[in-house]
Image (cartoon, rainbow, N blue to C red; front, side):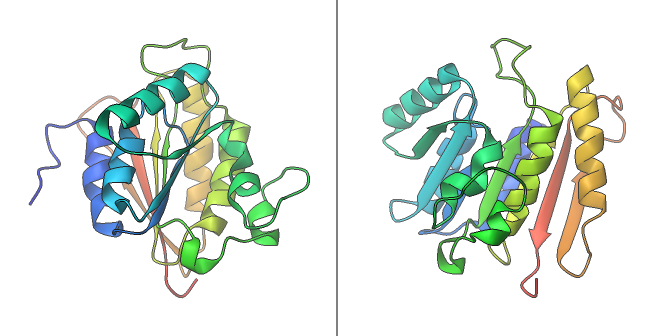
Length: 210
């Protein structure tokens, strides 16, 4: 068994998601940052799989591209907010923007993402003023839940330790808490004996009967 203790929250997330990824799957990294989650997804789905990755910062896209090239992997990288998730991944081009795009133009089930990852906040080592925003995150997560494959998992790491991150974490919690239990199971993984400002990991499983 792989140890989930004494590792970063992002590594812990990868360990838990590995069981839900198979060779040939599709996966999405909505906030690629320095590329480590994207690389994890590429390795997990293999050469026959497909990985998409988003970020609003050109520096993040370049870091991810360089890491993947160094390790011998490829992914489709979008210099774009993850709010355009459904627009860019749906089988047919979408018009306009909004949280119902995925429902209106769904990805085919056989090519739907098995895992969709979010690591919110700002680029490590980058400008802290450039961070994910609450309204865009809520829209994107709503799209992702529609796009996600039945039996798939959405992961989200939230960082309530800064002001925008606190608002974002609270809004995400409220969104996920309101999901119908018959369609989704939501787990929250937090370190109980640490500050309430410590990062929190959410895992959302889309039921096969959804």
